[in-house]
Length: 175
Image 1 (cartoon, rainbow, N blue to C red):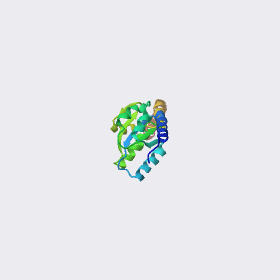
Image 2: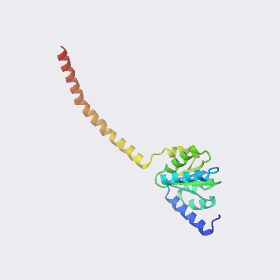
Image 3: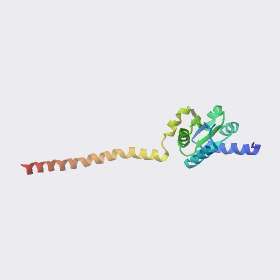
């Protein structure tokens, strides 16, 4: 069923609002996927906090105009599903990449982050990016490592002394 002018404006406004606050965007061709598979993809996206929408290319071009994803405009051809990461830069990439492994009909066409258009093969790199919580835990591990090493080193000195005294005691008892 075709959309009327007001509905088209509403779709453009909704996608533009999401795109203006998104961190990264993926456009994938979904030709050949069944309705059930698309429903499954939408459910996975919703669980991961990813905005996923099938939008006509002409409307998508208008929606991403003036956002970081303006670089994607030329590649918007064919039936595409748009995925926007709202909180985590790699969340949309993880959802799309994981789903594409199981369903060969989902083909990544465009990948964009920070106003730069990446190669579709770069989705793997983007998907492997750590989440915010993982980044914080890695940072904390790096910050904690020197103090742990110092504590182990300081603990080793009395431990070595105790082992030396025990070795001397065992040697005297054996003699």
